[in-house]
Length: 238
Image 1 (cartoon, helix red, strand yellow):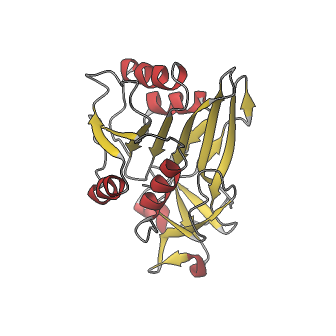
Image 2 (tube, one colour; image 1 turned 135 degrees about the horizontal axis):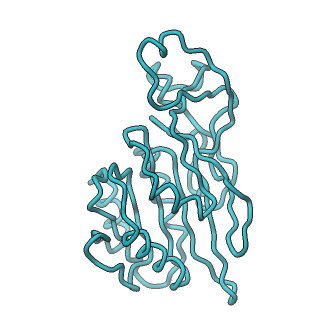
Image 3 (tube, helix red, strand yellow; image 1 turned 135 degrees about the vertical axis):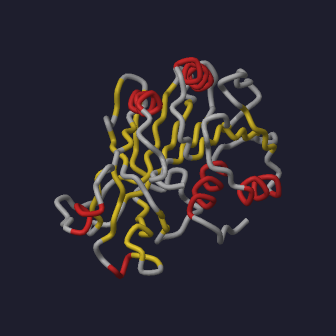
């Protein structure tokens, strides 16, 4: 179905629709770490015949029947047990997907960010700000548009895609052993970044020091010997 709602719902739905399966796809929302909730997304998935459940990985295992995990802007850092369950889900089962959505309401989450870096994805402690007024929404420089740089997972999306209150990502590596990464979305060349922790006074006198494009969505794929793979896709905006 054609998606006219937020970028996050576009991205999530596009990514999930690309998970090929002849059976009903089982989607699980991760909970227990202060995640954002998106009722519209859940309804959208259910209306497209996805099975949607909620899992708290701090207290329960992630079952093999789950195909896709959604982790939407948690604000509490998971412990090693939680991350171990995620790693087992992705590494011991083929054709599994984790979709992770960051945003600027999050503090730094060192455990979670280290987990993503092992998959070749860095989440920066800064906010995207657009310096070209032609590329912002509602005159808000933090509500910018992005550009599709690779159609994997994003082929049902249309340029320009709004990425409100986004954090820049980093492609830590292109390939490492059995894992390879691809940038899916990126900011404009006129975007800049404001570091976390900047004071109001510093913000008033702030001038851009670094310009884009910055990665805003990265896909990481782990290949298995039989040619199948598991995937982690991270987006800088929820």
